[in-house]
Image 1 (spheres, one colour):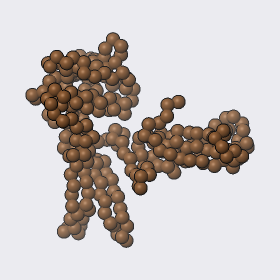
Image 2: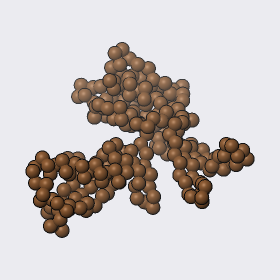
Image 3: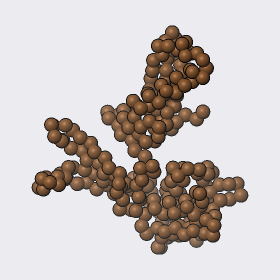
Length: 252
């Protein structure tokens, strides 16, 4: 259950050391604090919104989150927003320049040069960021290789799990892999070259991480739709008109 206390615990992880979360009775509220900072509380108000409040500086409610998380991914997204709201609030009251969580993670990136002094344990040039490690190097047969691993821990305490930290890989600006967002696949009727007879499917990246996979999933869905309507023959020769990737799937 994604209670305010559970969200507070996740947010503390994103804020990193020395932030800590405390759980209220039954998890109906949670508090976040770090040494020499204000204390922040999370609770649900009478309108069903998650409220973030500061305790000591008199600001009261500093942000609200109206959407109740029903999945772990949604809970993590809310926790990230809570963490950034706290960071922004503290930056404002202290007159500091505010950097978003993703900017801080980027600034904390660690670069390692290649080292082949030990033939049995070669180290390729790599970068570690947000717990993930990416090596970019020329391998055997002079092949340019990219190798990504997501099994580390960042030095600000953000644990990376595969189903929490999204990943997107692009080549020459084209998305070739994604774990979040969606592929929009359009099919064109064989006898109509215009826009009047186009069948469109939005395939979440969670179901198809590559364009090829999205094409397969969309084709399967199209055949299922045609079979349910009993007009499969009318769409014989249908082709995929276009495939595009979107970070924010269209709302039906």
